[in-house]
Length: 69
Image 1 (tube, one colour):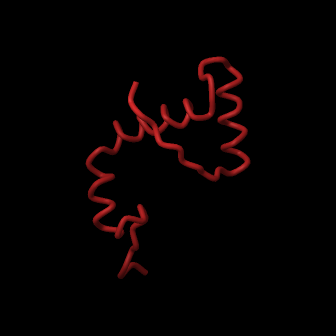
Image 2 (cartoon, one colour; image 1 turned 120 degrees about the horizontal axis):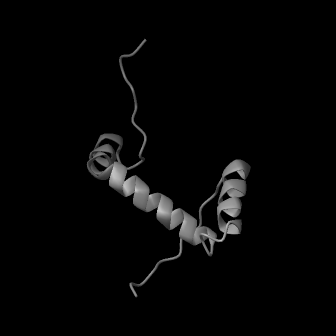
């Protein structure tokens, strides 16, 4: 089994409720499993975008839009 690091995240109340509901279905054993599954989907959908986005934003994950009115 690969080693794992612990990470604390803050979620909105709506996302917390959603994660809890997914765990309650029995499909996932924990909130960590839900978040790992969500991140895997994000990796599949945006593999190259994530790398280029980090370069464009200085690592913040947010792009600044300049010159738009």
